[in-house]
Image 1: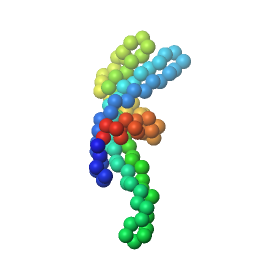
Image 2: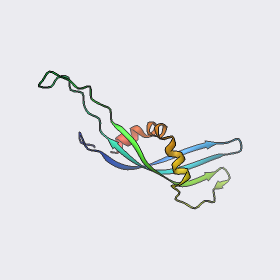
Image 3: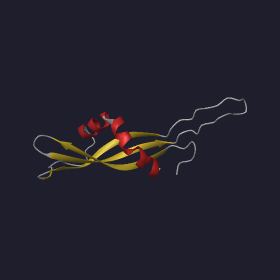
Image 4: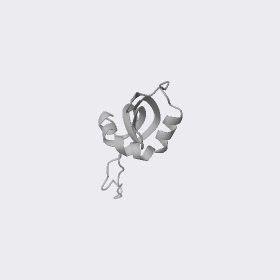
Length: 108
């Protein structure tokens, strides 16, 4: 469990299903994720001021494709790949961070 101000880097697996007109391709990734704890709300401090707090944050730092499978079987690619497929995955970082948010918080 994260302490109040501690950031933690964890590794998570992520699976993406891509559908084309011809077949489905499954990409498996290892993600390096930075989990930052949120700040709790403070109603009133000594000065009578407050602080609304902030939610925990999850940020994907790195993605490495570890497997590619097509409907007809494994693709003939050299793995692990962090090049083009990793960069393509990171372009959709916000969507992926939403997908892994709760799992990352639970694992941290």
